[in-house]
Image 1 (cartoon, rainbow, N blue to C red):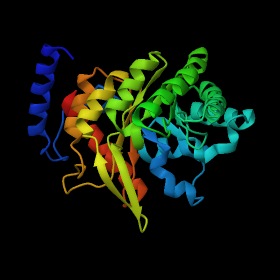
Image 2: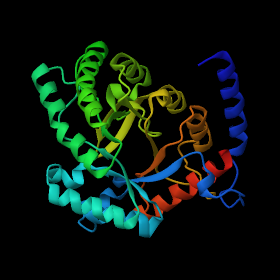
Image 3: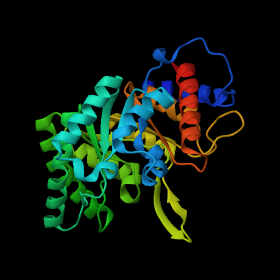
Image 4: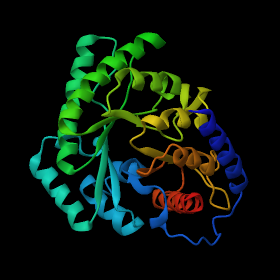
Length: 312
């Protein structure tokens, strides 16, 4: 970032700090169509409902559009794990989206192996396991698949493995016109220094990031099913570092105060960083709180609308 850009950034974020206390009920003159970004819904926001069998992946586009007024969606492959190569299923899903006027933005991929595996053979298998999801994303009209840069070894060893694995997958994605984007999703990937270096070294326009506002925990332990973070990368600095490579943004949310602001993070500051980076794509709602999922999604959407309109 240049000196002039940095001065502008500091001036902007300083001003945003004053705005962060504004109540959500404030009347705003802009409409959502005037915002600098578009809103999408990550399917993981409904993971409890989906795992309970109360909603299916096929029904997800309808729920997003009819229940929340959101016309762009981000799938999670866990909810149609065996359908990546099922052309009949994918064709029906695509038709439903078309009928509803819903855009398929990306597919989040889990459980297909570690792209930074220290074992070359396993890493190669992981890369190839993702090919079918690149093809499925292409068919559905998505622009990206979200992957994890998980691996083992030292900081440098995992970094080298990630560069090789992501580089191979990005070449396949490039042929299909599909981006391979990495979320800060725990471990080394939540260290923005580590991940931004990986992006620079891969150096492929089809390899980018999906900055997640809430996933900057580098070291965590679990006791009695409770997660405790022991080391965390600064979410604001991390978002700033990952935004130059961003092809998506994940608006994580957990809980809200009486004015509708997210209790654990400053959305004005985070979205100010997103705007400063020149990003104009989708910002995906990814609610993970304890309140009912529908209410959490709507609370996050209301917050994004308010902050987005204020900053646009």
